[in-house]
Amino acid sequence: MLSEKEIDEAAQQLNEYQNQNALAEILGRYSNLIASYKRLKSDYEEEREAREKYKQMARGQERNPFVLVLVDGDGYVFNEEAVSAGSEGGTRAAQQLNDAIKASLRRKGLEGCEVMIRVYANLVGLSKTLSKAGLCGPEKRSLAPFSASFTRSYGLTDFIDAGELKENADYKLRAMLHLYAENAQCKHIYFAACHDVGYVSELTPYRGSRDRFTLVSTPGLLFHDEFGKLGLGIEELPGVFRSAVLGQNSAQSRPPPSTAMTTTSSSSPVIPTVTSVTAEGQKPCSYFTMGKCRYGKACKNLHATTKSSTSFGSSHTSYPYQSNRSESFGSDPSLSKIDPFAQLPRKEDIPHGCVALNKNQQRLDPYIPSPTPTIMARLKERSAGRKLCNNKHLTDSCHNEDCEYDHDMLEEDLKPALEFLSRSLPCPKREKCRNYYCSQGHICQNPDCKHRGGKSKAYCKMPYAIHTADLTLHCFVPGTTIRSTLDLQSPPESLSGDEGEDGPGSAGAEL
Image (cartoon, rainbow, N blue to C red; front, side, top):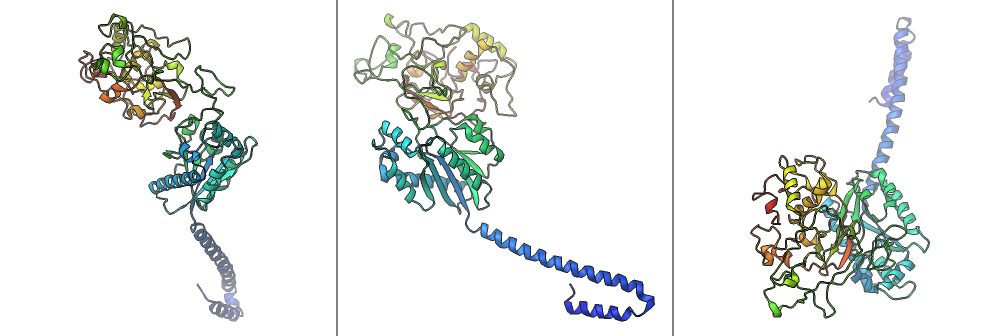
């Protein structure tokens, strides 16, 4: 680029040549060229200054990167051990949440970011709810020591009282989300409010932004399906929040426990709790009910010839066939009509989105009577040409785009038989599974299984420990409702047309 001196010399030379008429046209063009060049140089200098300012601004934005954790404290309640510990528990809860977030950030390659936590809740209402649950005192703001200790634990951590008016916490969460979603220094946002479907519209503009947003799920709350459709990251933060629903007037707006199934005005199901032991503190011996207990009078469990179970309504699942479990399960004539699995909950008694547990927090499957030979013959004929997709027919959803199994319509009266066989395939997560849509087995429902002392020669794929599980329903808890491709893959031994070693005959039940 020419210097100012060179430009002035060129202009002087031009003036000298302008006196020569022969070069008038050429000199005019040269004059215009110099003027254009000066304008171009001026524009270039302005652009360079603007670029330098932008670089300085960008370097400033990268200087203090952080991630934001937004928590609806009225729904996502911290674990009971921390809440009941008051001030000390607030510090512990803040540390647990920070540690869980930092562990997640290391997996994302964002370990260099600061963690900003904002928890918004109606402190008065939440204190009242937790007081009724026996987790804090009866004072109006009994949770205040916990929240104050939580706030002072870290410089960027706050537990904020949003006030007693309805939707105050929602308003604050939405405002914070809008403020930081487009902030260049905010590298990631963890959103812990997925129990309220109202937030879906706020997150919809960021659909598919897995590198930008992570939705936090917790076993203590129902994770709405609509959040799973947003294509955002989904994670649990183990041990941070409660793993069970609060009993009465909870912050999750769930009704109190009851022994009868009812619904509230918001159509939220009541989660019933039943006892699984007798008045003497003993649980019934499931082996004795089948006439196969080897310990006799030395057995620590109760040997009762009559079965008492809790009923959740007068109606039961209407299967298009009768159970063949009414046969004798032992030599005692008084036990000839007892079905040891009849104490399991019926499918229609399990609230939508929930799973059934025994007192040991082991998952229980719904009661499924054994299919009749006629039904099994029809099912075998239906699946003779191509194996059936358990997920498609039992959960009405298969997320495997390359699924090789049959998705064609299946007769309704054959679906219970398909579920019976699907339940004979053990779930990889065993009794710890909380996936509401899981169609695999978590207990063995074969009364003649050799692991129970039966005479069945069929190989049972269920682990031996599962056969000793207490079959008495204790409670229902919200399960995971995300239809994950990994969790819902069709079992590798899905139904086929033959009952060989890899067919349905070896899937856990002797038919």
